[in-house]
Length: 146
Image (cartoon, rainbow, N blue to C red; front, side, top):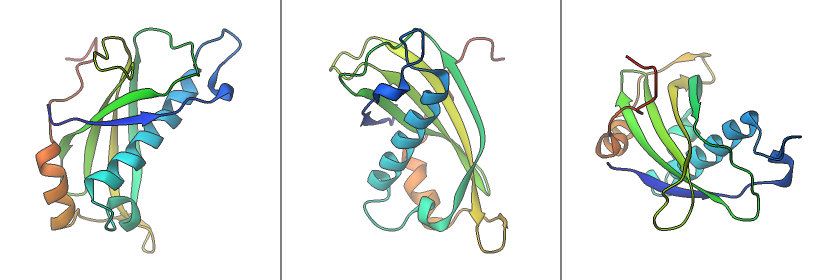
């Protein structure tokens, strides 16, 4: 799978009253990974974030509670599909060690390229497609999906 790994620090405030990372904090973790990952994918040159992109949909499957904040989590991310005006990103949030055997959550985010000035979707550019294409992998395998 053409995944990129991003380490995302956890914050004390990510913990909820039950002592584990709150479900809402997972969206922040995914956002941090996505922004950092895109910077790497686009090689420091302006990319899809600078050109304009908005979140159209998130889907998260929580697999096991995450209850620590002392070390970052590893987020493996890859593109799951490219369409005319958008693309999907798949993720696995896991332990940062080399084995990374514990997967805490799987997620998928669909993004739409967006012309912020015009206030409407825009087609992906040729460069955006060229950067995303080699990173396309399988859709996220979530339970209950057909």
